[in-house]
Length: 77
Image 1 (tube, rainbow, N blue to C red):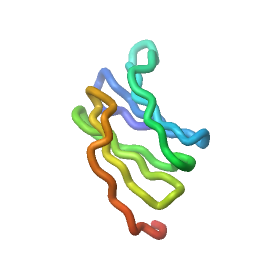
Image 2: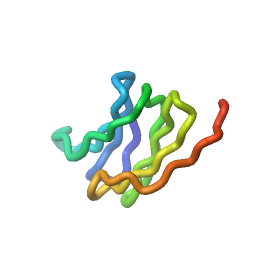
Image 3: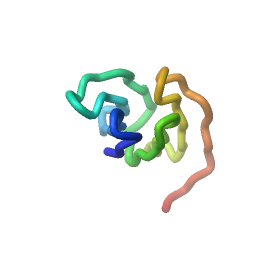
Image 4: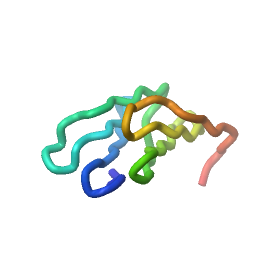
């Protein structure tokens, strides 16, 4: 889990999703679908970033949940 700002947080899951939620009541704003387990999350007020078990890093709009960019070719830490 990572806090994007004082109002938003992003969480990853083994169920192949990440979620952007309100920090105060944990209400779901966006569900972000992935092809494999989400192993890491980070971001800031504008962008959520997820690291997936498929070795692809994805960036998402925190405001809309829209996929912005993918970075592939990662083989580990």
